[in-house]
Amino acid sequence: MSDMSAWPAVGALLLALGTAALLPRIGSPHSTAVPRYSSLDGLRGYLDFAVFLSHSSVWYGYLRSGMWSVPPSNFYTHLGQSSVAMFFMMTGFLFWSKLLDGRVQPIEWSRLYLSRVFRLVPLYLVTVMCLLLVSLYSAGFRLNEPISSLALHISKWLAFTIPGTAPINGFTETMPLAGVTWSLPYEWLFYVFLPLGSFCLRAGPPVPWLLFSVTAVVAFVMIMPDVQRPMLVAFGGGIAAAWIVRVAAIRSRLAHWAWGTVAVACFATTMWSCPTAYTVSAMVLLAGGFTIIACGNSLFGVLEWSPSVVLGEMGYSLYLLHSVVLFVAYRLLLGERASMLSSAEHWSVVFCLVPVLIVLCHVTFRLIEKPAMAAAPRCHAWLAARLT
Image (cartoon, rainbow, N blue to C red; front, side):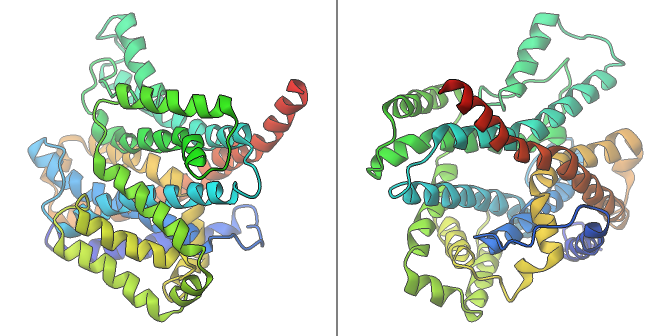
């Protein structure tokens, strides 16, 4: 088996879906309410799992070269890059849709931002804790840098790496362990831009929130080490989709099953013809496929399968924790033996990790993500009652 063959990815995905199909029996029952963008909920899980597969491939090369870089395969490169680009499109679509709705029903900005904090922060803190524990374990629980430096480096991670990343206690493998966090500053940059975007739509955001937005956007651009334009373009793809979806004739046409073939063709063309997702042609193709799904196309029902929905609901856990699982397996458990594994043995380890990862993420969703999301409205009501 070639180390860049697509078949291991297919097998791992089927194993993930099979595992996810069993989870509702051991978790709380799912809501019977139909979400507004059910196809996007299903898509999210596939994108997050695709990043796991991409990083599994990256690990094969990293263990042998010591260099953390994109795999020498368009397929595995796009499983990572195109998935992240579509995450940004999804964020742009969902929140620009809120702004468009806000022209009719004013947005409660305090509620919106509080919900983002409760959605992203709790599980992210768990990831930072894992990073801290692994860095201390690697050093034999000895301090390899002054307390002041350690505190500064930890603070960068606690700030969602917006000011950049830094090794904690001299631990240099932060990218293999928690490298996915690089995308989160872009998410927060888009969130703080929202009141300014609302002003551009003439939705009349309150002046204090508008001033906050302008100040925060400027601060982010100055603080973030390197703002990549392609990432901002990806948000633009989602914004364009938010406008298109509101045209009923287009939405109903693109939701037809036949357009699912077009969406798949867009993704396949991107994967096989573009060496990277961060080009104009790749972004246009990805945005085209994304828009079709945003219009309610479930890709022949695949995105609305129960296992797809289960993967989608635990998507944030999959995105943040898969790197931790891979690091523990290859660095802490296998150690030096990992670099001597054949391609078939490497992917056999990945197959063994898939059920572990899915069950772990199911647990973290139930115990951390879901309670935090449920607490956000209560916290907002409590604060509103005391500020009025």
